[in-house]
Length: 233
Length: 183
Ligand code: SF4
Ligand code: SF4
Ligand code: FES
Image: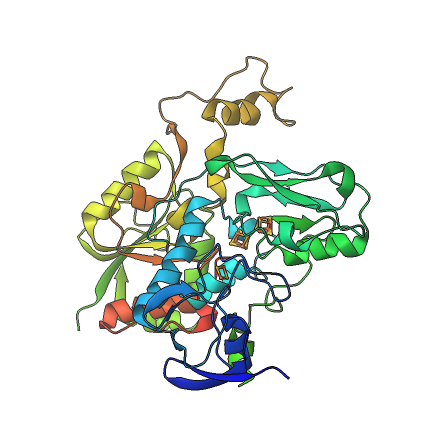
């Protein structure tokens, strides 16, 4: 059995198995640390910084840090909350997020975080970047206007032989997700569903579904993202 | 208490935000006790007749006329509110922001399915009376200072109600989870 370590989050005493990532350990203790690029079961990459916390006084990402004995974590200070909020606002300003016409609205993790952090308007000016859409795949529709470059699709989606369906194309501010058209041409319905599911935003959309769930019944209509973790306590 | 004076307008919006103001239902009777409307489509007063406490702007700026009205609002209102996604970030009209304006006009008046056979002289609207289209749709805070932002498409009636009553009564605004929506 793994060794149990004790640590604290905002002064609250927590316990977890040694070697657990801090986001997961926090969850076990009923504490929600917001995440965006992270996915349970997939190795973390720590790129979005939404999970930023202070550990022993130093700013770091909770999804890439393993808990250790005596660790002191600050999760909810004003400074950290504002930093997270700024990151969320930045993502809205640097893409083209037209939520009223987005199929993902109500089920979108980025939007849900903005609701949780009460973003009324981003503090940054909107960039209105030129981004493409790609609709040639029979099952998936890619709208790069909404991609937050979290790489969840690249990291989590492979076909039955382990080949990746998604990759980054181009560099710098032109960077975007490209689909391997040959491999993706014949994917199963299940894999297509899963690709749309791992995308936290509406950048990978399953074709033929549209606005499937009525307003009021969508994932984040009723309660904030993270509320399930906090209630399980 | 003196009644606060409120003005409202719809720029490049769909009037949905104004409908949502009416969606406060019977609370509109309470609102009428607290405010007097000046320039607004609600009472059809076309020009400002006095300085207003609160200006509510729906829609972004897509034409020269939108810019003119917006500047009038800033000049005549002490507090300016951007109401809804279009005022805040351009909204659906801003979907054209990456398409050159010539292409948009040609699609609408020359090449579109319903226009291509009905515009034999290939005229683009050019009468002096018609406001000029801007190169793109501008969120209103890019043109004037905006004091408050109420998101939603349209914003929920409760968000509007909470914001207005907080402003009028000088209280902290109540922001429960359900009132902030972007759709
Ligand atoms: S991906 Fe999310 S934030 Fe972006 S437009 Fe869609 S619902 Fe809004
Ligand atoms: S397409 Fe979706 S999953 Fe892939 S990088 Fe963009 S936001 Fe992330
Ligand atoms: S969730 Fe940790 S950096 Fe994105």
